[in-house]
Figure 1 (spheres, rainbow, N blue to C red):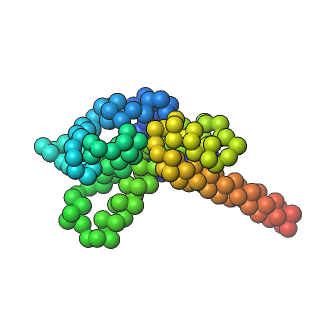
Figure 2: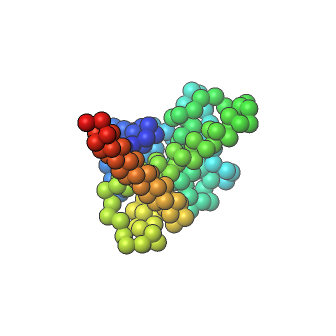
Figure 3: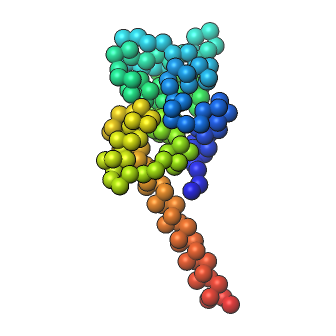
Length: 174
């Protein structure tokens, strides 16, 4: 299966920091390896820049799974975006938030780790396995599983069509 540019970026981010398995995806340890300080507070999660360094603030009342997911979302901003969102035109702000959500799913449940997992016989069982393995909420795991399977199926369909077109072209032009 091919990787998108985002999946390549996240894979390289993890591998260059010697993170290879879901067991290593512990928020504080990942933040430390990435040199991104985390602060817990009572407000909504956000990313701020102070003295030239980014700090991710996460609501202290969230579950561990929600904190990990919020970290994945907020981490996108310093890694992939520039500027302060409050000064951006609204459509550009919306685009950055969509990108951060996509980053979050791929960061919290990386494709290179997900594809090594043995899928269970049902969506429900597989989503539970993903939720437990990657410390994400069940609904998050189910969404990520659907994203992964849709991409895998689209790639398989593309490869099948490519072979059929190639085969058809050879028989018609020989």
